[in-house]
Length: 82
Image 1 (cartoon, helix red, strand yellow):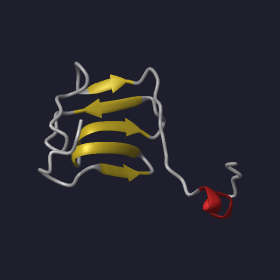
Image 2: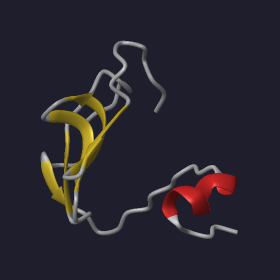
Image 3: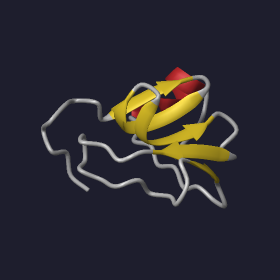
């Protein structure tokens, strides 16, 4: 899904959750800190329906991607990404 331009609530995160779209407590999709459960609501940010039959769901598997600045990874995170 692409951003609709209705708002700029693309991504939100705290130490307790990772969320995309929607608004506080009504995110398009929200994943808890343990990556065990989530919530989903329809949202205007991406024009999406709720992604699950129920508001709260159990996560079977999750795939997360990140973009990093390889030259600075070791310096910032003490990780050698090469």
